[in-house]
Amino acid sequence: MLLSKGKDAKVIHELNIKEAPAGAISRYWLHVVTDGMGVPTHIPIIIAKGRKPGKTLGLTAAVHGNELNGIPVIQRLFNEIDIEELEGNIVGVPVVNVPSLLRKRRRFIDGTDLNHIMPGNPNGNMSQVYAWRVVNRIVKHFDFLVDLHTASNGRVNSYYIRADMADEIVRKMAQLQNAQIIVHNPPSDGTLRGTADEMGIPAITLEVGNPNTFQKGLIRDGLTGVHNLLGYLGMTNSDVEEISDETVLCQKSYWIYTDKGGILNVHPHVTDIVEKGAIIATLRNVFGDVVMEYKSPERGVVIGKSVNPICQTGGRILHLGILR
Image (cartoon, rainbow, N blue to C red):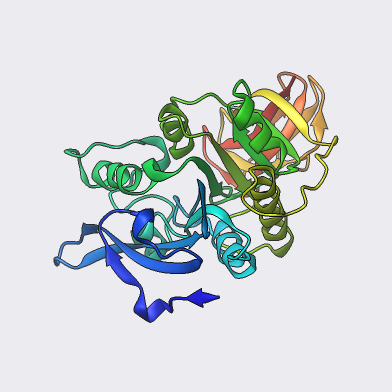
């Protein structure tokens, strides 16, 4: 297998799959912006290009700088892929938000959440320009997209999918991940996934666990889901694992917030089913007195929850998925 070493990675300004050598895995640095000292900021790109032409699957991770589990999913995929059997192309972007990854921060350097402002603006502020160039120099060249995320700071997530389940192809992409939970989430929401959908690129968001860490089991699950998708698309000879009948489908989801501050204890675990009226959290003051018990407004599944006990007014309690 021909493999270009990292030190030989070529600097590019836009993804051009046609220029990548067939039957090889190539590495690139995509120049996306320049910092305050005029130093280029480069996004790492990996391209596996089969000898046979075909579709392009894009894999992106670390749109938020503290969401790390997606990085080894992409790395391991390129280590495992048999380039001789690959039909089409796989493009891996292990780190989208490079400035925030280096600073160990979730948001972009101007305090903006990149995954709320897609597709950005070519003439906007620094985060808008960065987002626009990611979409227009990289993502627009994909035929399918899997965007890998995790929970945010102070929270934990189940292994779940966000997808427009009204789209037949997207629905199948989601089901092939064998996730614990799938949430129906239409596009036009400012996310990278939603923007790709609007561009006619079937896309899903794969939420792979918790921030600031590598979780081996969830990384392995995410990798299996991507292999399932490659097999289903006919890009590889991978066996497609049976779709799990234990996956919980949600028609929508939302966060429940506190209306007071204090020390918060969220009772249910992720993936638990909670009934309407069930106590989901207890809030105490600094002296240990119970000041509030929060109840579930309706029956649903716990997609994610807060694990940081120190909670100001308006803090998150849990992410509730409403069952179909």
